[in-house]
Length: 263
Image: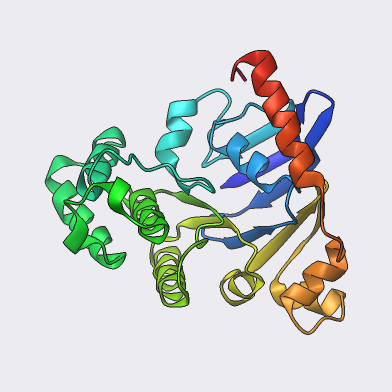
C-alpha cells in the first residue's frame, strides 16, 4: 500500500530524509515516530505530492505520486501538522467543498457530512464560520474532512495536538474502527507515545533522516529492555533536546526564498 525505496530529500546542503526504505501493507495501523526534525513530515509530504523526492522512489496504493499526483490524491486523506481549513467558510462549507473536490457522490454528501460532523461533535456548529472556532475545534474539523471520501490511506501528522484526552480517545477509537472494518491503511506521527503504544500495531522510528528500527511496540520495548514505548523511544533516539528542527526550518525557508516555492 505504501512503499519507499532509497527515498531522499535535500534542501540545499541539508538532507532532511536520507536514503530510507520501508513498506506499509494494506490495512496496517502504523506509527511513524521520531524527534523534532527527524524527517517524518518531509517523508509524508513526499507521499502526499507536496514535495518531490531528490532521489529514490515511492508508491501509494499502486500509484507513483511523482507521476500521477491526482490519482494519488484521490487515494489518501491527510490531517496536516499545520492548520489547513478555510477560516472564511463555515464548517459545513469546508466539508462540502472537500466532498465535491474528491468526487463524493452528490446523493451521499449530506449524509456523510452530517455523520462526520456529528462524530467530531461539530454538527451543532456546522453553520459557524471556522474563524470563530478554537484550535481544538479546527483540528476536529480537519479530521472529519480527511475521512469524508473514505480514503484507502490515511496520513495523520500529529493529529491530536490541541485536543483534550476525551476527544483524542474518541478520535483514535473511530479511526481504529475504520481501519479494522474497511482495511484503511493508517500512518500517523505523534509525540504522545502512549497513543502509539496503545493504537499502533507497528512502529517505524526515524532519526536524523534515517530509519532506525521497525517493529511492534512490544518488540521495540523488548529489544531495548524498556517498560514503555516512550522509554524505548528515548533509548533509541537519545535524551538530548534537538536543534535539528530549527536547522531544518531555516534550510526550508532559505530554499523557498531561493526557488520561490517551486519543487
